Length: 511
Image (cartoon, rainbow, N blue to C red):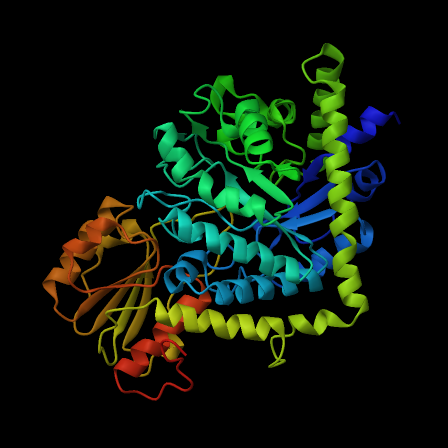
């Protein structure tokens, strides 16, 4: 194997489908594969994702082992139950940096206990457009300074548990109405706006020493109108490296996304996207949640494309070797950390039953933050609960969501609907809650909700997503700023408390 052949594999972060280690992976690791990222398609009933991660760590002790565990609405370890950690929007509303650091440390402790040492989080995107379909509650807020200070706190919290952060999605995905999973978004703001808004949190993260930064498949028109950031040497080289002074590893967002590989006859595919991103200055290429029966085929195609690009001069060999060296340094610095933590007996930090554990503290802080984010909680004894699924999902992989109805004393009924059900479903009568993520995202859903709330003065809308300004058209709305288990548990307790029912240990605002 030549130096270039090894380097071409060492910059790849592969994915695979299913809850068990695939048969092809040991060979790829032996050939120098850089690492593996776990996704929602690795979650399956009866299988523990953390156990899968530990198996991968045993197979490849020094390889990159990554996951996008943001807390809040985007979780892999808690896909089946919802995250017990408050999401970014909740943390931003509380604006307590110590709580944000505690939550990140708790997430990091769980990851470290599973052997995962690279977390593709936090989102440093400034959610300036409330109709953004992919960021929303994943953002700390719409104020750049607030997002900056909480991004830094999150990075430090992960690091305290021995987990490296990957601050995303550079240089910002907040001012978009296109989801880069499905298309190519463009930010059309003026350059001074981009610099004073989008870049502020990333500059803070770089100054705080974030080890990695993740690119966005977004065109920033004022900086490079021709290429998405992932493929732009102007964005990755001139801006991130030279101007912001970032010297760590640049990680791509998943290259199987439409914003990277394209769609239709003009699609360049994952191999083409890999070459372009590497040439632009990216170091660790996230191939995405590969779902074919043999992920090694995609890896081989990408390696061949990289080597062919070196041969024809499209990709300088020095650029490939530089990327490989950066990834190697990242592995040398961070891959040993979780093992050292375990050796010191610190895995107890990830025991939620231990009242002194980092995770226990983080979960309690999350519940307090989620409670503080609530306002306008109604007195509504014995409500009926209607969940309406708008299919609004901020990241690939479905996560359990919804109000824990078992926590509501006197609950009259509970039902789950999808938009097509609404035409033949009468609005609820009596005390009732309509629970939804993105109430205005589907015209059928919004029309039905408006009719239900206006037609019954005991019906309330519960918005679990980022609040749309249109919600002001209704006068009975509760916003949670997230659909995590922390947020919905906090709401259930607050509803119970407001209605005068026994509630157990309801966290008090500000406690």
